[in-house]
Image (tube, rainbow, N blue to C red):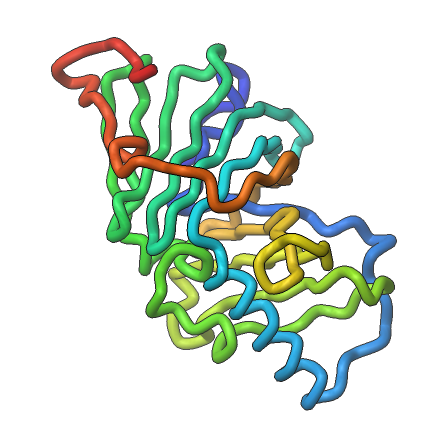
Length: 219
């Protein structure tokens, strides 16, 4: 689900390959105790479930460092929209059950079940972050790094959520970035900024114009 970057950077693979490489400086040998891990995972789950709606700017980069930007809109349960900058004539939306990639340049639509994507950890309410998540060590008490994968379903890929402590964010934790790696080892970097919580979001934001009937991108 990744396109040639020479045209418009790694075809936005949120259904298969969104990823963030965590800076090496964040890593440290200290590993939280089992009790601490359980408590912190509970905090992460509470923070993610505490998001009703979210709008944020995002920067997406492939493993070669090429970047594109856009605006993310999230509405729980399971709805998300990645609106890319105008130079990237693409759109990704989730209606709560599947992720849809719309490429207006080639009039193509692809759908992927949320449950089969690493993003299921963020969007699928049935995906148990606490059960399949594992805290990764960091050198900051204000940063939590959680790797989420189902060992019995490697085809679902891996996502690493990076949460930063911030007053005013749901549960006191803000999703600042994530790492997603799919079964084909495709990787993408996504960083969020300018978070706005609880903003009004219509369900129409997660609909799209089918390019197979029109080449116009929705506004």
